[in-house]
Amino acid sequence: MTLQIECSDLVKIFSTEEVEVQALQGLTLRVDRGELIAIVGASGSGKSTLLAILTGLEIPTAGRAIVAGHDLLAMSSAQRTQYRRHTVGFVWQQTSRNLLPYYTARQNIAMPLALAGVPRAQRKGRTEELIELLGMGDFAGRRPAQLSGGQQQRASIAVALANDPEVLFADEPTGELDEVNSQLVLDALGAVNRELGVTVLIVTHDEEVSTKVRRTVQIRDGRLSTEVHRSTETDELGQEQHRSQEFVVLDRVGRLQLPQEYVRSLGLSGLVRVELADDHAQVHPSEQPTAAEAKEDDR
Ligand code: ADP
Ligand code: MG
Image (cartoon, rainbow, N blue to C red; front, top):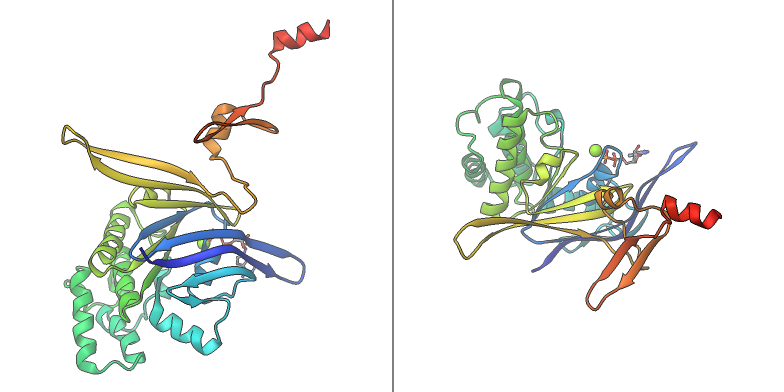
């Protein structure tokens, strides 16, 4: 597997006149070529900031960020423009940011190709290929205002793919859509990943999206906390079994963040007791004296 996205200890600080906001606080993420991955997290957790960095819009304050061999901390502004035109594609939540209103969906797809200087005949071939892949035959001749939200987002995906990027980023692509349209857009992103082999990274606050991809990463306070890997296996009786495994990130000094359900259900707080076993480590609630024992001690 080739590593396509590699972030380590990534930090982004926004400084305004009065305050400094640390939007990313040492984030580490690795994505292989051809993966389809979802990053979920509450509003304000740093998801859009991460995408702004990975798409070359924002420069990280510190750390390491490499996408398809391009070092995002060491790029000239000309290289950054090339990177944004050819290496990555992006779909934003607001469809108005993805599509030009006075052009048809088809013309919108051809636009980035024209800007990149692709000859007319080739432009047509690529545009029709994407229209076919995204099932846009019925509405490619219409302008954005004449399309449903789901159709607009599918057109946006086609626009983002026009120049054959290596990675497609989508920030809350289903944020303004109902359930049916959300499903259509997620299916389209899945098809793009499968058929074209493009690495796809979807950012969302919708936990539902995470059930539709194999790997989900949770971002909290500008760091990645937990990761869930899903797989389907066929057991000896020929039954499909869905398996999901949870992982947490261990940082360089050995800190890890336990999933919140574990903390809640075991009532963990303050000091917890840890124990090393042969091939794993255990975390226990520290032994609190029971009410009866405490009374006993008081005597
Ligand atoms: P999310 O997309 O997960 O909702 P963001 O990445 O948009 O989160 O924001 C993370 C934090 O960084 C928030 O506290 C937000 O207010 C802050 N932030 C984002 N962009 C800027 C900016 N351009 N200037 C100042 N603060 C920002
Ligand atoms: Mg956001």
